[in-house]
Length: 122
Image (cartoon, rainbow, N blue to C red):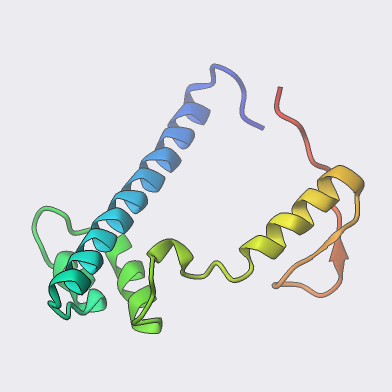
């Protein structure tokens, strides 16, 4: 559990926040390009845009490979935030039910039902 004032925990939290901010920035940029392409009929291939960006000198990042894979898998993907989120609503509801009423949940990586002891942050 993270300890208040623990510098190592703070660094981990900052790293995770930075990764989330980078991902959201890429998603926003890709969305803007996609909307402009639709409005101006550029016909941009978003997977190819991610591949080209990956080879650039300023914005290249390994994360762009994941974005490219998302567009390769779903060329008409409306928004990158929707990629791989098919289970999200169900997962969230199962977690809430387990947290508030110990109703258990199922996992996609293991058979059976599970229950977690959820700890509230102070």
